Length: 104
Image (cartoon, rainbow, N blue to C red):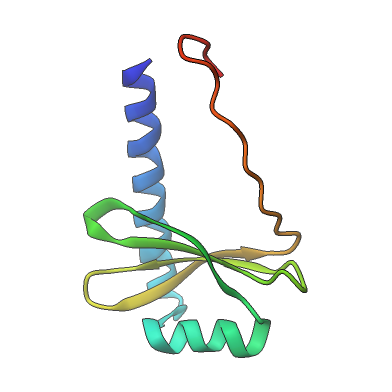
């Protein structure tokens, strides 16, 4: 079980890293302040969650409660933020953890 969770974490980290590299090559990156301002002004999105990814990259989810649009970004230690994914239909969900000893 622990190995499975670790593999999932490593897979997610690798996916974020590869997506960030692809976004950087396609011109989907800019200084963080610029990206955050653009998401707020153009789409009404604000940060909903964040976490630490591979190589100390900050992964953030921005979304608009009004329109339901959402964007996932990754910011490297150099302060450059890349758009990784975006879409519609954002919802906040608070699932509870399974009981100890009961795999989900």
